[in-house]
Image (cartoon, rainbow, N blue to C red; front, top):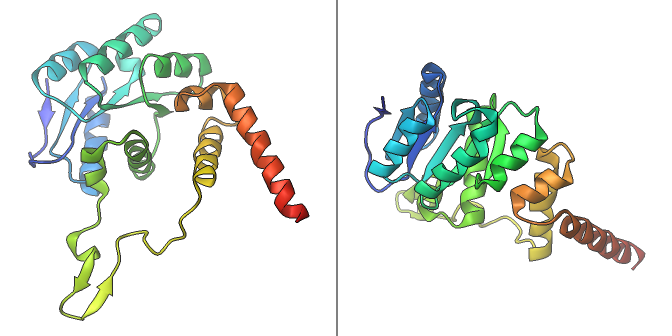
Length: 222
């Protein structure tokens, strides 16, 4: 059975796959309070998810791996769901205890694995980062500032700036460094897992880290 919250047009749709429907409903409510999705659908298993994805497009798929299939079939199931979702952001919930399972799920097409007990605010932050990284404009619209945040407040005559415009613009290598180091930190220092999440090879991360260290050393000696 699919549960749909109030529809809002021209916004990203969520699909939550979780056998514990009460838990999924709490997550849907929390996300709905923070964002403005067009709809959040809840299904209990992969079969229902496949039917839902065939009927309607979703931009974000949140899947509890334990609710999909037996551990041996999780990778195959994730692959099928990702293909049916046609480029949607796919985030898998796991217990975090199995690095090999996390790697398998990401190799199957999930954009990121997160702990099952992640708080909604942190989940929203990660969704925003993934949307920016993968160019999902419809998802990014969920995090856009309100119209009054840009332009000018006519009542006060005070010019306003887009959110973040006043912050310093970092060079590309520094932004890349932040993304990579953040991924490694989220993976508890596991470079191989972080590399899989970022679709890089571990050797690339090690090479970039060495280059950054050498660049910092040169700046310090100057």
